[in-house]
Image (cartoon, rainbow, N blue to C red):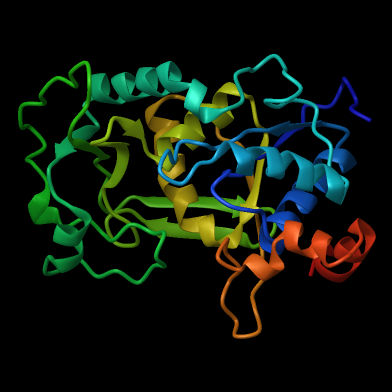
Length: 288
């Protein structure tokens, strides 16, 4: 039951690019628990910006599987709410407004370099996982006083946020404690808009969490580094920062984190095997 006096606003932010697996389920279960314990609202946002991998069938399955598991949300694409729309594909003007604000502040720059260029550049070590950005080499940056071209009506070049080299970014995480990184060393200039005229995950996430007044972001521990980048965006846009809670990841028998390629461990597959929601919650979703 939502307590009207509670300021807590949590969120679930699945991407409908495949069937939800147990790793997603545990993170979402923990997010729902924390919202319930705080008497707060729980938002479901469909992060469907990946047009290549998005299928409407996956979104329908996502709603069905989460409800089968026993989750309920107070706002979302299927139930509405004061912060609609709740599909990222329908929130384009909000992202564009955030990009224009960053452009007006002069904290972004256009980038014609490919990911391969960055990976192959000398002095661009990359120790992150496949979903993490390599560190952008300093020699690829335009000078700080270089003329900033206009954005244009349709964007056909990547735009990156220029990080403040040497700045220490820190936050206290509700699950893993104090976290600290140095801009330019632990992460570099990162994408905020892509050349296919779509916002990056970092920009869309910050714009949405701020607009939806999310007070705590609960997500997997693999996204800790993203939090440092997002904190820079919150500050550049003058937005209030939420609290963060990064859950430990579920792994397979080889210690590899679960992903949507693990079809046998999807909620849909477990349902077909006859497993009940109670069994899934008891065996897999309890907090470590």
